Length: 95
Image (cartoon, rainbow, N blue to C red; front, top):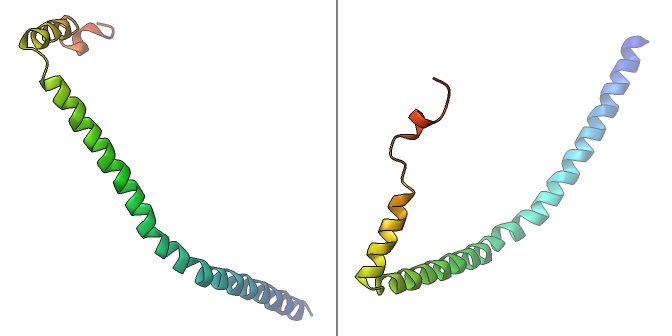
């Protein structure tokens, strides 16, 4: 009797697993074509945003290029004030 009850439980488990598989398979067959078709809209909108950001970047860098050489020189002097005189690994950590 123990073998028979184990066999019945296995068949019930198989039936549940088969039903779950069929439900998921049906849902995937219904949803995947929509998901696949959406890729074009997704890529187009993201690439459009990327190109817009790239255009803005180039416009802004063009404005920086129009600055006078004196202002660019003064900016480089300010930046050099923040450059460490010795490597960071020598200034940080116990000796």
